[in-house]
Image (cartoon, rainbow, N blue to C red):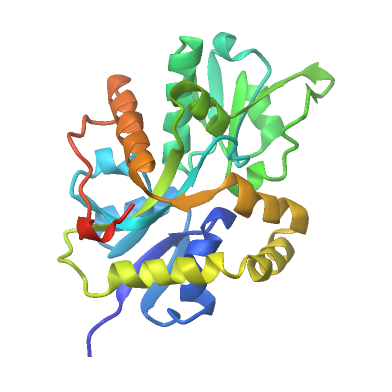
Length: 278
């Protein structure tokens, strides 16, 4: 009996459409499916505990033997809503930020934006995603994922003090004119697994065709208003990984390397690259 591929998927809301077919649809049972924070997905691939992972895109430069499974990703074009830098100071005056390090790409993105747009290199202080405490120990707080969806991005005060809220998807688009890619499916040291790209694409297609079902399920699970979940999944997050997303990934990895946040990467490798038609 052939063992199932061990697949580690991100536990955040933004991954729900990608894995819906595997958890609720025709792809259910194809994989040994487990969920974790993005950073843990990357670590499971690194140590061999998983065969396939939905990993932070920065890991392509940190684990050079990773190969991207083409077809879909977690990305945005403009406001992403779930990656917010909440600051007590304007961007160019930030000296430190506390960061929820569950997502490694977002932490690097915050540093890239700070350097490119603010001309600064703030000190990074890892901290659990508790906004009040983060703003007590640092000038700014990086809140990501489902925690960020509970923050009002239009907030102008914190404890009666003015605050600045930066959506890092918006900041990246303003810098580059490109979409921002946060996570991709990747494999490590794995020969072309028969049917893997098709199974992942089928799961995503199943989920994207059942947004109403996902909104009902996830809003109840997370305690978020259905309208917030719907807007996030249909307007903020995108799931394509076409030519512009590839270009953006290369730009992001280059800027990260220039800041010493990742090794320089000559090229991103793709599994069965011919499957990508865009």
